[in-house]
Length: 279
Image (cartoon, rainbow, N blue to C red; front, top):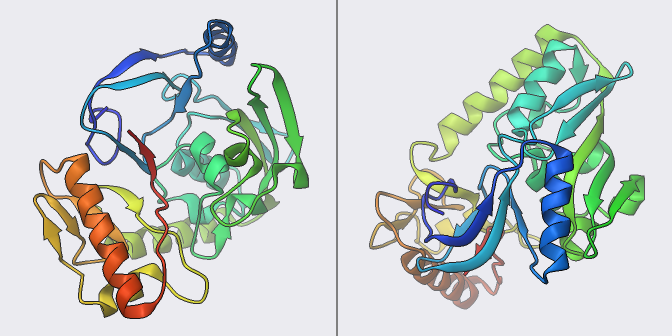
């Protein structure tokens, strides 16, 4: 899995499929369900930490297969689960549609973004995703609209019910393409200036605890730069745990556990991982 995740960590999985259409994806999932296998959809592999040994999972990779995208009406964009969020943001800018600028620098796919309600710089997918198509536990196609998606901070009905997202309809507003590009450029410049993009990572390691910020708490505890093997709390942004070179999942988790323990002891705040674990 190290070749399929942004952390560049993980052992081999039992099976992996690479469907190229939505129909192939549905058929693959339904076939797996019929024989009692629960597949996992994998997009860009961001926000995911996989174990070092053999992983007894069936992964269905939606990228680059499910990367279709088309304009729907004047302000809508229908996106396949595998398409990168930043590609959709660029498509919106080219069509003078505003509301998705925040996603320009987010490395993940639309499918994973919808499941976790990805967001940045005051924006989140909950504000723009009008409708989502997903498969339930029985392999049946279901459409979720508006509040049925149950978006919350880094959560959704798709996460709670372990639904497999196939595509999403994003509804934006008319805007000025030059102004949209300028905003996207600003967000990207901020990311490059403040985040350790030069290293492999899973993005923000911890969720924001109520009443505080994870990075500020970690920095306050003197943990910025703390290292176990090749796993390290980023010196640029304490909310990121980076793989400096050949870090293992074991090292990452040892580091995470240490950070959680120290922060709890010194501040009283409990840090919950935002990165999904697959062991």
